[in-house]
Length: 262
Image 1 (tube, rainbow, N blue to C red):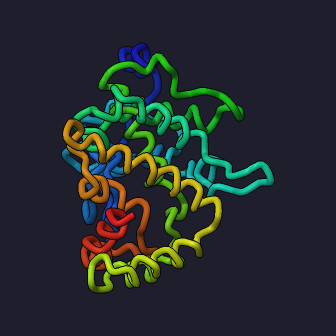
Image 2 (spheres, rainbow, N blue to C red; image 1 turned 180 degrees about the vertical axis):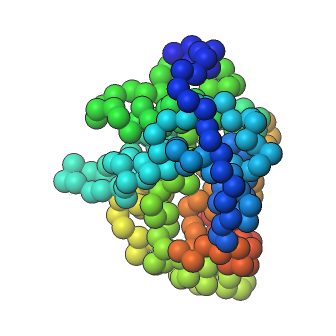
């Protein structure tokens, strides 16, 4: 199915990119790097890209993709009497990526998947009925590893509120900045702070961190040790509600260290 999508000529309209100015940094939907000040935004579907990336966008223009954040898969994970409800996008992505042939892939979480296919998989999760298997056993090969990894990263980046909530951001940063680096007092403070998280968010964090620790054990082949993984995931898992350039640059090292410690 994905191969046919990649080869099929788009039958919908092309993007109409407009130049806009943002004071807060955004992420480019094509290369996943930060972009601010002068950026290009599609008039209709609202994807954001660098000027240099406009010619590289292969996906067709459709609905307002950035307005999907209110849909079910982007809401905070909930608790029910049967247990924690892990979003199917998260569980299916992790189940696929923890296979040995995937988890040992060099460039895991650093090499982006095809943007159009990432958006297609995201749309399928938004529209599917409970229990539907979107990430299939037929996803074989390196290109699918990077595709699924990009879907998982996008999920956390587009959450309305990060897993480590806005309310607790200052607390996590303050504790992580404590000296010495790995004192028992500091670790105990982190344990108490993490207990303040909503139970649903904690469930997803627990599953994600277990998976990322597994990824780091294959760092000799995938080149993703705990430090590299924290650089990739920290900005999406722990971020300030006041996401200015000054705050992001000032807290970047501490935020990365927080995720690395976990």
